[in-house]
Length: 191
Image (cartoon, rainbow, N blue to C red; front, top):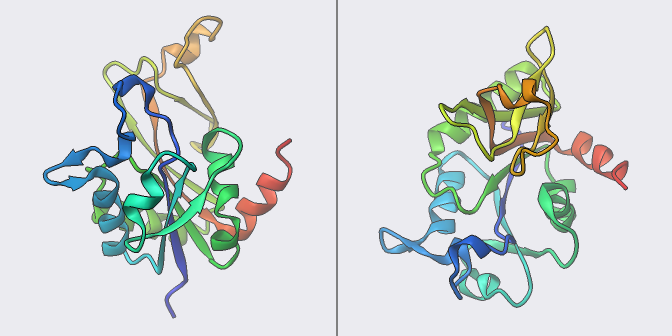
């Protein structure tokens, strides 16, 4: 029997570096809002539900209404706060995929491969990573001796970051698969 899967698409970021009145995820890519490319890939990978996490007043929910489910993030920053904004959708699922709404080139094949790896290994969390020639500004992946991920160190501002960490080339892409129950348990412990 297929396991239930929900995809959460984070679209609550402010996108200030784009210097645009239009929310970043609504910028068109090949004639379609970039966030809708992500939603299409999610559906193609077998998502039972696609929930876009937005902020009130940004215009994203209004533009996407009817094309994806909407969860509004009214407080907090970051991935954890975004997931908590969609808590009901997470609680109703077995597996939860978390994607960024500003990654229109993510493919259904990549999402499906992440899910397959996650399920085959019986993992609580699966993180998509890559190696970058210049990883400046990205979260560096620190691994344990057994190859599992110990932590991700954000290096957007590198002052005070251990030079050994800055030497790492493996980065967090910002795409994840979680066992839903374990994810909610872990988030309950975050202050």
